[in-house]
Image (cartoon, rainbow, N blue to C red; front, side, top):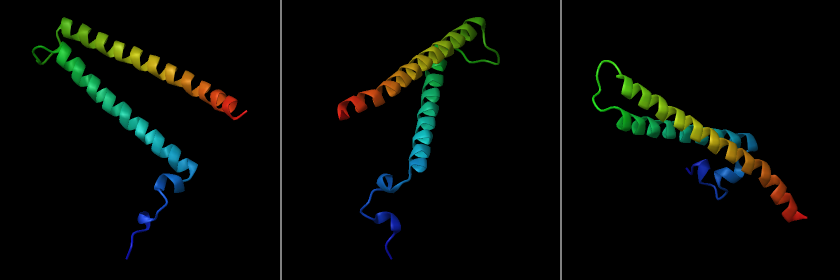
Length: 97
């Protein structure tokens, strides 16, 4: 008995637009989670010399700055991607003319 997923048509080609969008959104969520995890590790390594029961003032300031830079950078990247996405349909339309 052959599995239905082994057909010659790729799952992406056969998927409806809603499913494709769902997969894109979930992939983006996964990327964000991985990025947050990575940034958490970087900020921890950078700011935490001696973990203890309380944050000292230097570690707290360092963590706040690290997180703020992460947020600023993420916002910049999102804005830039949004600009690119808005420009892309115009570019592709001009190619078809």
